[in-house]
Every structure is written in C-alpha cells, then in structure tokens.
Length: 258
Image (tube, rainbow, N blue to C red; front, side, top):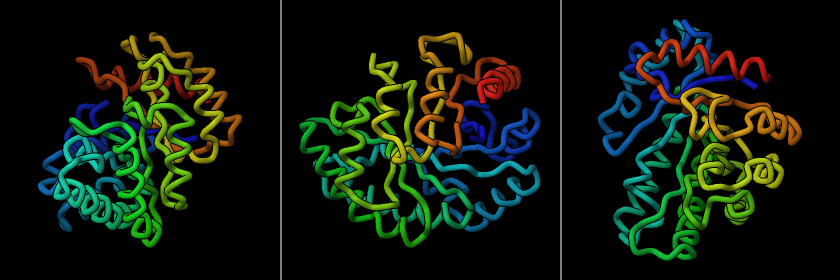
C-alpha cells in the first residue's frame, strides 16, 4: 500500500501542495474540486500541464481526484438538468484523470432533498451505468464513496450498487472513518466489499490525530490486507493549526502499521 493525502489535509494551494507533500514523505496527493470545478486548473489544459510538472518535479503522484462537486450536482436529484450535469462531470473528469495519470475518481454517493432512498439509489445506478463506458475507455475508475446516505452506507449496500452497475470501471472508495461515524462496522464492510475496493480514505473520528479517535485503525489495516487490498491509503485527516506537524505524525502512524 502507498500513502497519500487529500489536499485539504495538508492545507496548501496546489502550487505548493506537491513540494509540501514530498517534504513529509507522502507518495501521492488527492486533488479535490467543488461546485466551481470548471474554474480549477484541472479543467484547463494549461493548468493540467502545471499539475503534471508539479508532480514530476516533486516525485509525488496525483493519486486521485475527489469530486466534491457531487454534493451540489447529484445523480439523485429530481432535476433532469442536475443529473445531466452530474453525467457531464463524470465524463469530463474521466478524460482529465487519464491525462494526468490519476486512476481513481472519488464520487461521493449523495442524496437530494425530497428524494426517497430507493429512488436515489436507482438514479445513481442508472447515472453511473450511462457514464461507465467512458471510464472504461479512458482506463480510470469511478470509485463510489460511502458518505452516510441511507441507501449507500454499508458494505452490503455499496456492493449491491456496484454489482448492479456491472462495470469494471465502477468500484468503491471506502472510508472506514465514515462508517465509524455512523456507528457501523468497517471490518464487516471490508470483508463484504473485498476486491470492489479501489481506494481508501483514512481518518479517525473523535481524534486530533490518527490513533486518538474511536476507530481501531490496526484492525482496519489488517482487514484490508486480508482481502488483498494493495492500493492507496489517502489521509483525510485534520490539517490542524500546524499541517506539517500533523501530516508527519499521521504518516508515521500509518507507516508503522504497514
């Protein structure tokens, strides 16, 4: 397994993020885009060239892209225009990820106001099915994250969604901390999800640093190894008022377990 960090965990602008991550010893970073995604460097050709230069110059990979934008443009929406935007984001992001060498696209499985859980689930399945071919063509993965929605928070629910979509380009971005936050069992989830897990977030609910919260992180790492997971573990930890200290402390904690 390789260890990286989402940009918010290091609290640095992208122009400095890669150098900062290298200074601490991270192998990669995850870049997040929100509602203003078209204005970011990822959505501009010259911006992507800069990001590739930052990555190559620091020897820090772009492990993944986190599409926070799905909190605003959800496939669960009752508005057809919003669902169409969700599809456009997925397809544009697949091309972008392929260009910059990021294999995984984190897609939070979000809901929408006034939409029943079963309807939201079905819309997500159909939305992902409509985009999966694009991801397959570009050789990237749409990795669906458990973010506490009632139709997509357990391992069994996530597995059933991925299995129904039935594409090698749609897997799970598993966040054991989100499971613990909802009083669910990440060890059981990992056992159910198995090879469907494409990438992992790591945080420790209730703690300032890894190892200080409510999650049994050594057991989570052990469970991941038992199902054969060997991909990225991306820190989604607090930057605190000293991101350098926090990043180094959390990285060293994980390294000892790996």
